Amino acid sequence: MFTWVIDVLLVFAVAVAVAGALARYRGNLNKPLGIASTIGFAAALYAWYDLYLQLQASGGILVLKAVPMVDASCLRIDMLSIFFAFLFLLVGFLASFFSIKYLEHDTGHAQYYALLLSMVAGMVGVAFAGDFFTLFLFWELMALTSYVLVAFRKHLWEPVEAGFKYMLMSAAGSAFILMAIALLYGITGSTNLAVIASAANSASLTASLKTWLYLAIVIMIAGFGIKASIAPLHTWLPDAHPAAPTPISAMLSGVVIKTGVYAIIRMLGLVLFPAALDWVSIAMILAFFAAITMTVGNVMALLQEDIKRLLAFSSIAHIGYIMVGVSIGLLGGMIGIYGYTAGLLHVMNHALMKGLAFLAAGAFIHAAGTRKLSELVGIGHRMRPMAVIFTIAVLALAGIPPLNGFVSELMLVLATINAGLYLLLAVMLANILIGFGYYLRLLYIVVWQAPREELMEVKGTPWLMLIPTGILAALCILIGVYPEPFLAFASQAAQAIQNLPAYTAQL
Amino acid sequence: MDVASIGLTGGMLLIVLGLYCLATKRNMIRLVLAAEIMTNGAIVLLVTFAATPLGMVNPAIVAIAILAIGIGGCVAAIGLAIALQAFRHYKTLDVRELKRLRW
Image (tube, rainbow over all chains, first blue to last red):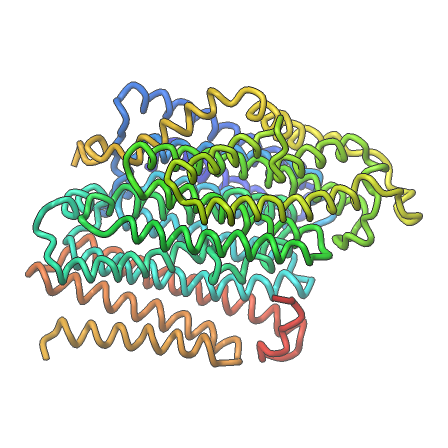
């Protein structure tokens, strides 16, 4: 119904839930369910590859029917969708793999894996959506499942409280998105993204309609910005991401906030960009918020005593870097393509390295049973392989040369120089320096210092945790050493953003 | 006043009312209701725009409105479920008691 990628995920979600319900009193099904869900993600990745080949053959755009009962609903898949869908599926696959071991002491595996699979299906659907019906349907599928996953360990107070906060803010964001959909429909008379793009392109855009369009853009940035955690709207993130089970934290920090970024890129960069608005001012305002976002994230991360909370604030900082790329992209032309490429490459790198950092931290938390940095002192000595992987992740986040974070941060810095935004450049460099401060502190505490007495009984790393983190660490090094194919992938996606004629070709 | 401006003002008022309640109310159930009121305001806007500017009702936008009503129910269900869990932990529905998380 919605291309094989999403169908496979949804079928596996239902199958896992039904199997878990049927086998409730028949022994321990935790591992088989985890393996089934991981196989589901692997199958979806294969279906993704098939779709990628189809897209390459079809010349840049695939238009498919979505919900059969609703005439207007369609999927419109281009390289940008494919790029984001790949990240969602890859991190989902590894998080599901990691969960097999990590969740061994928890209950409710059937619900957990079903929700995880549906969440990824929702995210891929958001990336594929070609009209507002499909977009909103999948957006809410992703949002609803993520509320439940944040509050998954309901016997503890923290996930429940964080989940409630997240749910309220995110529901307000959904209301804003609906409002923006209504306004855009009022302006252009359609819910189809391609038709809106053509209507925005036409000369019939009067002055009063332009004012309404500005209002719609502001409301839309507020709505999607809550999910992407742009600065004044970020307050749910540092609560919700640490409270969730660690594989879910990796998903939320690595990819779920990127759906907000995707929606902003898609709506501003492609669908509304042909409208004759003052895009330079919009880009500057977005860059201003990006600067605030990264500063807030970095400064707050300096003060944290909780390893997952620190990583969550670092996610806010990295969203700031990504938004720099997006705002430079909105300047248009070659500068814009370079900015988008840098931003998208950083989206990919951040998904990999933040996912890796959360999963490795999760292995430590699983072994030590605490999230406090003061109680995790020197745990790296007791879990050597995981310490190596954690070091790779943190150094990549800090942007040390042979790792992937360096490549995209360098490109972002070059993009700001290209665009001539020297103030933004100064803020960004200062932020990267502040970042060094807490990343090195994190490494010093977790890996360098001599282990505490209480951690002496911790021994070894489970291989089920080493495989998924090892894959991510290998990718981090590979992108750092040999970035060409990944850069080409990101640059294809960036070119798709500015390729409006191809996007609106098949109405 | 024509239908369009009544719908527009009504929808905007509902959204502002929802935002006001989200900012000031302390009871968790009222907060869930505030989010619902905001969504309903947005749905009123959707239906208003669907009916008025282009002369005929567009099925696409009404489909979104119906979808949003259904999803509003799901959000309320999940919100109330989380509020119930919070009540079991804190023995109160007052969000001021839920300030154990730092900002």
